[in-house]
Image (cartoon, rainbow, N blue to C red; front, side, top):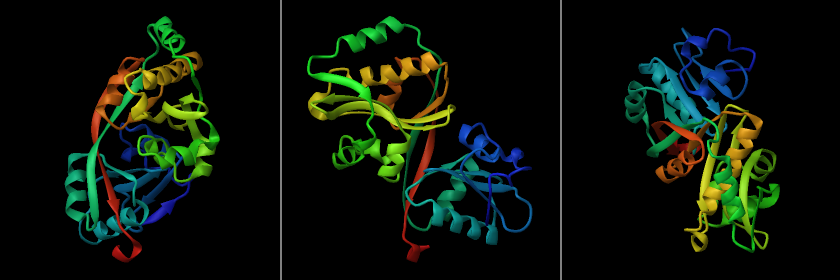
Length: 260
């Protein structure tokens, strides 16, 4: 398969799905796109940071081998998203390395209905705790603890974190104990993680941090889709102006170059 530059993707619009990152990538606004080296571009691979989509018509024989090679080379640890039932079947049949699959959840921000309630959450924060924008130098501290490592997992390294991390954290003596943060993909899409140190749970801290995300989006009149990792995150987000859209399946593969 061959990779197309941002300005070389004209004519691929028929492969677009409802997924916002797919549409943005095929429009030449972000990410990487691979198409078959020969023949009709009836399918393609799209990767935007660690989201990888396979779209179009499932290939057979030699084309299937080439497609799997592209996925295996560029998809290690990524969220591989089959965009139809036929792609799920194809992927499971062709995976030749360790993998796991799990659900993720898509929501859309519809606006804050009760602003006073969200502001009240912030006003009720207990003494000794404060909420602030995530700090660019939080990466190493978040990565080292099990409860907070998913915050850092949205990024490949500390430089990406410092550049692209967005959201709010609850701090105790300068150390993060809870938060709602992640990565923004322009104004249309955000990956968000909700998490709290076990010692500080049952205090509505993640909800309070997330309320600041909602207030910010409402102030800026931005209505992105957000992607979250579990049902608990869906429940929290649903209290803050986000509407559930769908649950979908994601695959992660783990391999080395020698195994491809």
